[in-house]
Image (cartoon, rainbow, N blue to C red; front, side):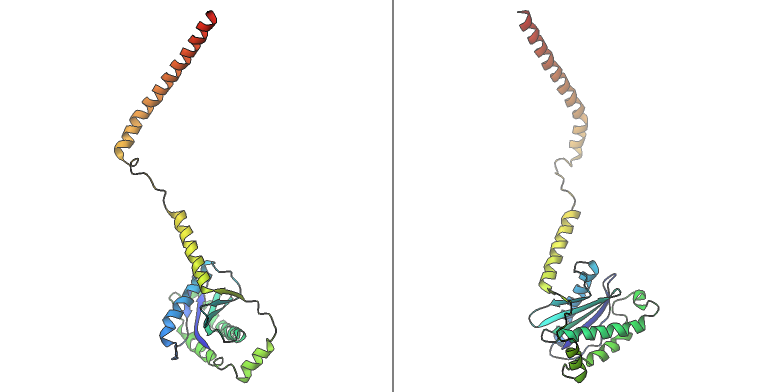
Length: 226
């Protein structure tokens, strides 16, 4: 069963529309699913996920996100794991075709607020109804038409995606973190002392080096004379 749908813009990861809500046994979990769908959209926008036209992200043993990427737009739907992926991607393809009718003058690019493309919500709900029952003649025909065909879908688990994001965030923090400076050398008084005595220390070192060199020369001279 198709439980949640979000359409977003890849350029900045902004969700544009989500379809009308519907009451079912998972209604209370919709905010939880929606949060994960938005996270996946952001990861696709960041380029953290391999940008493949079709992807399935396993949420758990019972649910999976199916994603279709096309022309700078990402179509995401949450389905039961038992729901045929072929139908899920047919559903997303239907949404893509309908969105093309709305786009015209770059409508998607002109949207500035999340979920403000409310005109498309009813379109999502209307198309979704066609895919609720997998046993309808139209859906059975679609399943048979794709029987035995390779869908070329990348499959990943959400836990892996989250783990990769945490690792990338940690690396970015390490790179951006300023190098620690010892508080002892950050003292203004020590800086003044260093500026004052460093030249004197260099001069003393030069004098000592010259005296040692002179003493060696004299020692060699005495040795030769004797």
